[in-house]
Amino acid sequence: MVEFHVDRGSGLPAYLQLGRQVREAMRLGWLQPGDRLPTVRDVVATSGVNANTVLKAYRELELAGLVEARQGSGTFVKASLGSAAPEDLDPLRATLARWVAEARSAGLEDEDIYALLREVLSGGAQ
Amino acid sequence: MVEFHVDRGSGLPAYLQLGRQVREAMRLGWLQPGDRLPTVRDVVATSGVNANTVLKAYRELELAGLVEARQGSGTFVKASLGSAAPEDLDPLRATLARWVAEARSAGLEDEDIYALLREVLSGGAQ
DNA sequence: TCTATTGTCTTAGTTCAGTAGAACAATCTG
DNA sequence: CAGATTGTTCTACTGAACTAAGACAATAGA
Image (cartoon, rainbow over all chains, first blue to last red; front, side):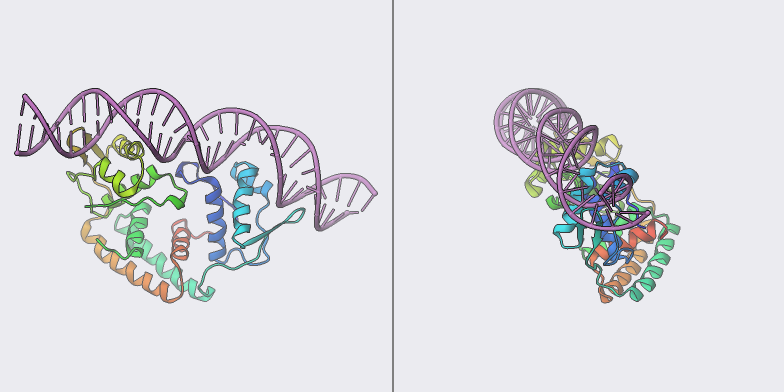
């Protein structure tokens, strides 16, 4: 069962973090159509954010057509995200893990790695 | 000269985006000790955010010991970031670019790629 | 010395995020 | 049918981000 984590220090509003984590779990195949999201009360208990904040996140996901809330039952995934076949993700994940190991050997920290990726994804124009 | 961009839709406060972009430029070697940051008025003009907001970003960087503001002169980089030697970054960048090309061929979008990286960096526990 | 450029400060206002708390309504299960 | 569980709504409040605007002060260069 997917568990959410809210990083109060990141500066990103909590409801956006929750929304991103749901989308991420969907992209990685951890949440698939029919799966039930953690209940609002669950997320309140595990992440410490207010129920209205969790609802705000779930409401946006619903407006985006990704989930469907059913009072008394829960909130269910009703779409897929991610454009790659699951069998394509595993080799990509493995290659990326090796690259991360190399990067760490070279002394890069996580923020260095993110900076490199942002540069490469943006076309590396500099 | 490094140019900043503020994404109003990201939900991350503008001053944190500016701070992150300065750190990123330092990590990637685009800003080095002695370099001058864009002036507050420059950033106001190019990014559209308020001078007080830019100053807040620059103030935090100064408190972190990364830059030094000199009234009448500008704000100068006074530290290094990034823990890898520049000659280590280029091969890593090249390998990462190839991986990104593979990922894109498999149909991954940028958000998919970020999700995979976050998973790998967090240890891939699932 | 004067002008231009730079960072800095202040006040007051708006908007948004988040909270607390209580209560309501729909669904499900025993 | 009743209780438990779930999503939902509402009000009122606090705090943070951001803005506008003007003015001040330090530095640099002509």
